[in-house]
Length: 412
Image (cartoon, rainbow, N blue to C red; front, side, top):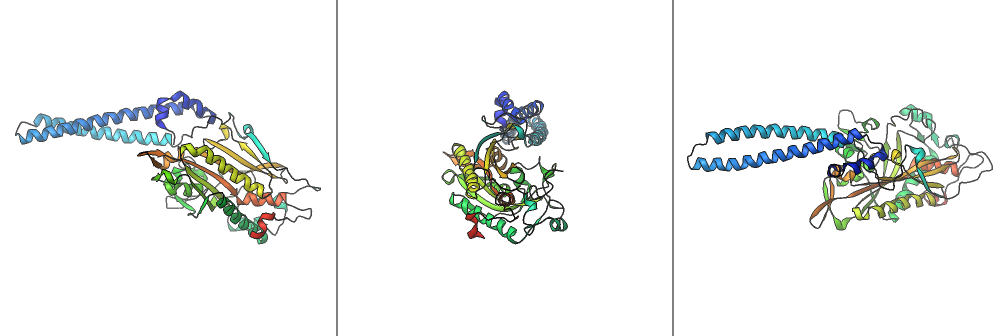
């Protein structure tokens, strides 16, 4: 959540920074005015309570001395009613403030470029040369028909579901195990979490309330299928105060992920690029502000080196303000080369949310007897389905078969 004190104290700087994300001026001005009004109302309430406490003590003293208390009692009664009235006003303003603040995005870093959308993202570097073929490469859904069954996926659920079979199923399982082992060697400890999360968890990482339409909700309960394991893994520490010496905490986790893909009608309707259910291995770090940039680079290197170890050409893409996610202060996407499409496609997204999620989820650490908000970071390492697609397309043979990368052979 946005630092409201920063908004109150330096509105112009916050507005200038959030212009990168094209946040409306009137929204921020309204947020500032509500927060200042809340501050004033709280001060008024505190002064009323202080006055009430002092008068209550005086009332007790007068009673013991058997003096007239009628005037003071009338004042106490009137003040009590005023405290209740102002208290309700404070609660109402707090709710209004929470509604607006929870829908206001994170402030982007200074080095995030200006831009409107994905066309304005900046390529930082490319890794590995793209493969050359002496034939026209095919897309993944044209290769190895024994690996992916789209028709039965639709039959079992609906469109954007698929069934992996035979070596396709084995290869995805091999990828997941390889990714977890690779991340563990980089210092990320493995956890296994539920695939269902409550509202508090989804609010903590920023999916609620703004992105509820993209979530699968459990009917009759305030529970949702997770869109990414970032949600449960980050929220392991919700409402906790950690010890500074335990930081950074670096975790990796495999889960299935579930997304309605709202607003993606007509996009990537063929194949496995955009599914309602997909497997992903995630990296999550909880750290101090001082370590935040270093951990970001470690996570980015981990995901990029994983792709390199699989022999998959890819590039690093710094997202511009207009394409930057709601909770992110900075994001670098990794895009893998898909010969069948003759283009790069996102396969990982490494983000630093700084203290934005920590403020929502109340994740802190103790340092010199002070409770300080942590920085949280997350990144895909990797989306298993898209990695499977990338292997199929980059390792395809003229006869339509697919070679297996050397590092995965022991996992098969």
